[in-house]
Image: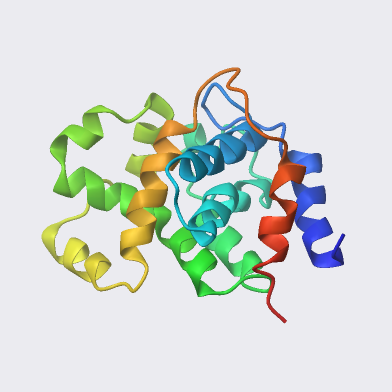
Length: 181
């Protein structure tokens, strides 16, 4: 296996057991999110972004209850910054924007906020709450905002206890196909 990809897989093996206020582990959430994207016939880059979107949660040492402490570790930037050494913007930028996408959807679709899980509602507050009109307009100008919105919806779906998914290894060839450098 490519050494760079092996470091990503090793991070999931070492920290993927963590939970972050949901009823699934980080690894289960990643696999579920990617599986939902794949089942929706999304392009491979979207499936890869869905798999890796919360990678930043695995990189900080703030603990599983970081949101309950009122701390925003900016996991979207932690993950995107690390993954930018491995993948191009088609994967990295939707990851960087997925928290903004949640904030945008809460502004654009008031019912969306009602459907958020309790953990996602808590993190929303420390992430800045729903966007205002100016923030929303700025978000809409981001080149990958449309993909980030789709990614966000899969993110919201990927919280199903005991859902059967393919193992991480089943996504290896997909991720390898996007490695840069």
